[in-house]
Length: 397
Ligand SMILES: *Cc1c(COP(=O)(O)O)cnc(C)c1O
Image 1 (cartoon, helix red, strand yellow):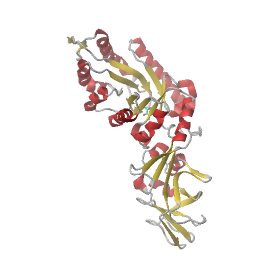
Image 2 (cartoon, protein in one colour):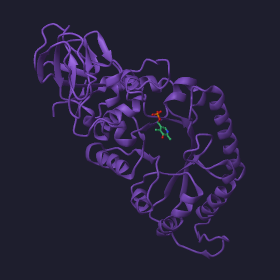
Image 3 (cartoon, rainbow, N blue to C red):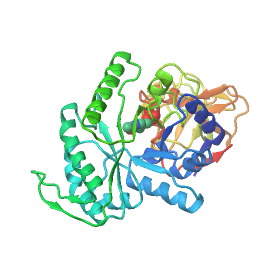
Image 4 (cartoon, protein in one colour):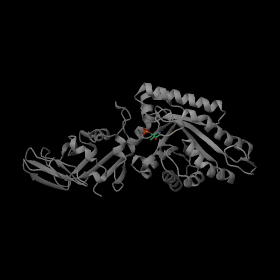
């Protein structure tokens, strides 16, 4: 591969320090393959830094964490899944101690049969997190569903306490006594904030969350933890909404969670090299179409990265650049599938093979994820999670 994605261990560690300076209890979010950087790359760094609670999106990711731990570390950690889990994956999740998120009555009903089977078998407890909708309107129970939810949870709780199995049907009838019984454990009740920089909206969400929690308490539902905070809320409100945990993703990877910078370290350096140089005369065009009209005699360098690797095509119309010899080399014309053309006329001593930095520091210049995101008119996460899997990831100090 002609492209390298370096991931700095030191910078991740500095970001961890910053995060933990605000909230010591963090569920580290490794969803979508650690925001595209690779769970196998990021997890060992976090484990070595004492992180022991993780959140992922999918069962495959949760199992990967468990496998890496088994093979390389003699340590147990907690893993929760934030996304939907297919009914057929519930058993394997529970057998591996992986924690599920339940966010709707529909989903709970889907799981009832398999939950009952697992509990009856009595080998494993089922660990769930209940997600509440406090205003994002994505996943989560609405306020008016909580009583019904509590009814279902209550039945499981009674079952936990009595060591017997109440078969759940619509009327709540049908009692069957079983010898050994697993428990349905409610690990947490949580919610998610949609717009942390909007104080009014955020505080309304917090208020709702608190109100909803009181319903669970009133209904006598036993749960262990509460959490609400992702990276933006953590940096916006500091300790104020720490609860039992924060769930932090983007800040680990050095993405700025707020519109003003909070001083996180840029973790990645994405680079390639010049594979061709050419002198092209004023008035000629470069790349596809007719956007690459040259206004002066130009030395054009070709760098083998394009939209197939996750470099956004949209940046071609944003006066965007890469770095060569610590200087800006502006992109000329259209971004191609696996190449870009850049202007190196004003950079001294350029030759084929010179390093080309697409994201990261070179000399006194830096291209941050935030800058790249602005050029592409998107957000940092959308850049980071889209680097092609074929790009070699390398951990550096
Ligand atoms: C992705 C996600 C997080 C982490 O958010 P960041 O802003 O990346 O820190 C936390 N909670 C939920 C529910 C998420 O989906």
